[in-house]
Length: 110
Length: 115
Image 1 (cartoon, rainbow over the protein chains, first blue to last red):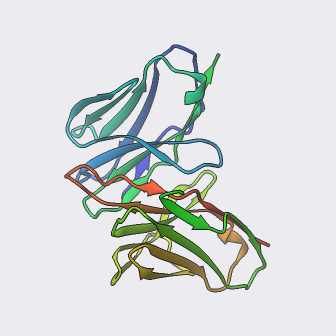
Image 2 (spheres, rainbow over the protein chains, first blue to last red):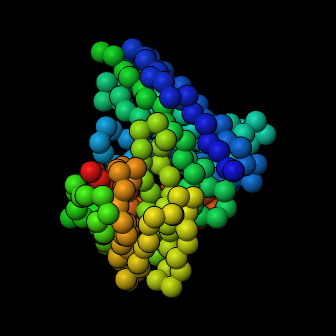
């Protein structure tokens, strides 16, 4: 069974700090990796995707992928209170459906 | 208007009743999905469809059925609702443009309560 694991949190960081969110996956055949942000009671919103080893940067967000270690992470620089949400890691294993982790709650305090 | 529209937004129904959740999209995507989200369990795939003639079961399809009426419409039915189907249901679409781009666009969700 394909699994995607995330620490449920909450991860608490002060405003302006770097938040680091982590995700591991079980299927070595996984091809692409996604980070979604979900505010309470709202739908998930895609913020990053990555499919090559290394780093991918978009504004304050950086996704990092290490396929050998089956590990993907999301860094949020200069964290803001508006970043407080649950972050979902999702993995595509080549069959065009996504398997989601249970999410990590991030709390950014002013 | 939203790209992916789900109706109803909220619904309370009784055990044993049949209920249909509807999803329509204006993105022109071929691929559509139904997920449910439960506290502590995350998002789980119920059914998915890659075109009008293609329907596939996900990991938790028991107790559910679907209909793909058109490219833009994908409905989820609970034939005889039970309380453990109480959850937040999401419809999603995707249109892969490249090797990595299988990201979904989600609807706003339907909060279903079975009493």
